[in-house]
Amino acid sequence: MPLLKVIILAIVQGLAELLPVSSSAHVVVAEKLMGLNPSVPEMTLLLVMLHTGTMFAVIVYFWSRWRASYLSSAAAFQWIAGRIVLATVLTGVIGEGLVKVIEHTLFRGHPHAEIEDLFSRLDLIAPALALVGLLIIIAGLLEKRRMGGSSADPSLTHRESLSSRQSGLSMRQSGWIGAMQGLCLPFRGFSRSGATISTGMLVGVGKERAEEFSFALAVVLTPPVILREVLRLMKAEHLSGGVPLASAMVPSLLGAVFAFLAGLLALKWLSRWLEGGRWYLFGIYCLVAAGVVFALYRSGY
Image (cartoon, rainbow, N blue to C red; front, side, top):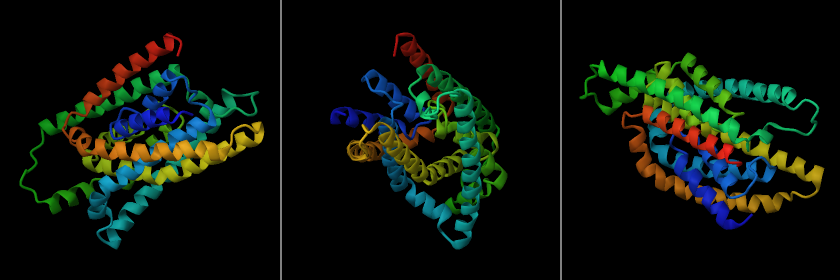
């Protein structure tokens, strides 16, 4: 694959990752516009590695907040670890369950078909974007209503605010967020961050706490997803003899580096916009993007 295309995809991923607008959908559309097939193993591996690059950017950016919230003491770490484990288990059970159901129903009679074969379908990405857009709008409007009726004291200290945010994430709320993350796994366009943060807001978690927890879950989820795609690429190489793992890994690693750099640049100013109390605007963007993606599908992409 030309390195210029890898760099373009990395920049798209890095800029879109923090926003709840489905960075993977943006990358898939960019791949289609550049004549690439998003469903082949080397391209899905590239997408995962781009996510890896931006996840390292997220770790660097959020580290101080996570350290203050989750690593300040053994009790704080145990508190968050239990919630992450519960959410991740639910993600795996629901996500893998959905994948198996889809593969055994839609792909019946096709022994080598996989869920990734659907990733290039713009006719599926468009409705996924529309659904997550509606979810974000609902969560954002309800948040605005709660903020309008809030009488919170603006003079709260940082420690009091931190304690309040931490107490606002129960095991039940963590379970709902993890379950929603599982629903996102098989579908490109159904923004993981948009869906999980919105779900957290809908079940009563503060947006800042939901954001921190959502990205913490993403960091935990990324390594097994990378392993899955590497194994898938090795399987494809074995079946066809024409997909060398080494040649696919080199552009993927390069893409991860550029995605990391683009993600760091974007995170410096995008986080302020994300926390600006206008969450519903991202939902409107997703609805518009869904219309654009559907128009591209109708145009033959």
